[in-house]
Amino acid sequence: MDSTNRCDVVLLSVTDTEYRAVLHFCDWEPFRIPGDDQPYERASFRRDGKEYTIVHARIGEMGMTAAASCSMKVIYNFCPRYIIMVGIAAGVALSDVAEQIYGDVIVPDVVWNYAVGKFVSPDAAYITYGDVGFLPRSTKVAVPEHVLEYVRAAAESAENQCHVQIGPMACGSTVVANRQVLEKQVHSQFKDTMGLDMESYAVVYAALHSRDPRPVPLIVKSVCDYANSEKSDQYQKFAAYTSCEFAKLLYERYLPMEDDGRS
Image 1 (cartoon, rainbow, N blue to C red):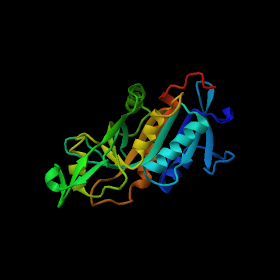
Image 2 (cartoon, helix red, strand yellow):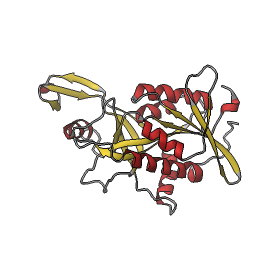
Image 3 (cartoon, helix red, strand yellow):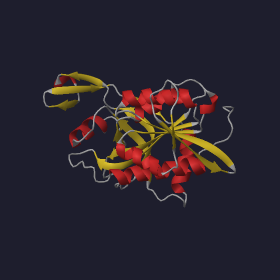
Image 4 (cartoon, helix red, strand yellow):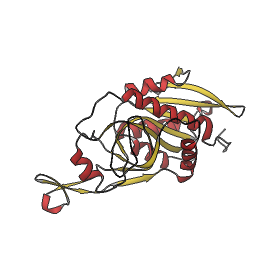
């Protein structure tokens, strides 16, 4: 790795809407790394009299495979202190969870893969869909607890104008637009799940299993719709905006940026 490429924060996005929201928040400079076909953007921010570097990479397609590949690449290329994925997610709107509305920010403390399992006959499983049964073998990764302290501080600050929820996020390879899937396959395993997306598990897993010095992973995604048949694109721009707004508050004001021997 070329040490001149090192940065403090890497931001990841996927969709066109997320990408445009990220571009709105910084005066980005496009750049390339020789031998790497991934386009990047670079910017800087000042804090306590010091200048810090932030790099953005747009993941090539939705899903965990592309997210893991891109995450490992940026970790290797830039050795960031933090890798933060911003964007949109599906909410859950549970009656026994604090009110969750469009634009609410979800920062997961645990991300779990709900799609791992085995299809069997319905009499061999407690999760069934007609004549098909499903035996879950879900896996989970935890965001380091120490960084969540700063998330909570930012969420409670007067500077924050977003409603922030911290809790489990489910990740899978498909969009969930069916309430039955949510109730049977998601909440039967993690009943307190607050949101669903298609990349978060891969980003956190990649960060926690990369080489030293490992970056701290954070997922900052906002509710654009719910995991039911009433999905629409109406609130995607707003949700992408609030996600980036809270992520910016985190890295510009709250996340520690002290020297850790990387430079």
